[in-house]
Image 1: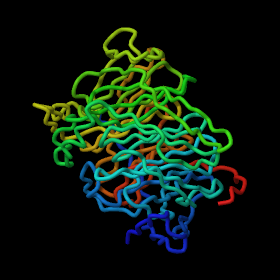
Image 2: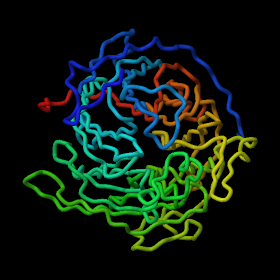
Image 3: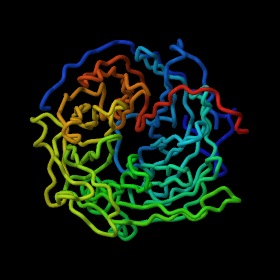
Length: 467
């Protein structure tokens, strides 16, 4: 059963149900590349892996009727915990009921016991969730706070490097909102909002998800807010799937020292980079050491890679095709095998596709790039060419172990990747060959409608935080 949160916060720990996990699948499969192509009351129901394993937290959709899309899997209960052993075996630990539709997780940059999440709903504003995690036992998690996110279908969070504020990205109505953070990590009410041009269509026309899925670019859709960690300026880069643009923001803070909270945090739009039409940019990632960035294009199942010429745009709009642009386009390549590449069509504004991209992540080594394909149900793996500015070379395209790989993440060591297959209700773990990008399936477990995967490496015990 799904437990609804009370308006005053999460139910007490004694009321939380622990969902018994099914036994893990321990079969090992090796795939050949297709080239060109409140407190979680954890009980140890299964044999526990090595203490040097890693905890993965996974969000599940709890109410499909509230979403911008239509998942085919079963609904889940909230945030679930899984253990990944040193040999790649996944085992379920327990579930914290969270409504409705938890869909993102982000650790606090300096407080190891604080974690943030979001909820997705197209009919009302989403929320920014605050969790507390025991660093000595990461599978023990409590929901301690909820704040209105300022917009609908909240899909991405970014905390500034000094932990003064969290930026919430709202997909449905293209609102980017800032919430102040207290010194203990608690999020306050939204203090600033920036809205993309054309987003007024949502309030004027009240579109439903049928219209949205047919006309993916009828109005703007902000999808992420990402920092370039090589820069110390704190600027954010927001992909707008609806407008084929990347918006650059600076984040200005006025601190209220006595309260320990950033009382006035303001997003200042400093310009944007326009991309080719009908790409549908979903997420951007910056390489940790190279002047390179990568954007996964959801609507065309492709990845674009760029030379990064760091600068403040000063209010200007640049084209990625221009030399010297902030994001100077180097190339765009498909994430699908050749026989699938003709199945992506946008005609008269109507989008039809047999497959569409999901997540993009750079492997911890900095040498590999992974992208999920929903429909083709695969992971596309690329080798990053350091000698040529981060250019991409396809290493292979591998079945994801299920249907609709919406999200995935790496273990802290980079030895494994865990994939959440939304429509087949499962998580699949793969061992990674860091040299070639080859993948070998190590295990698979049941998980209803997984939409976000986060690995939490083992930590030494933290001081008592009093709550």
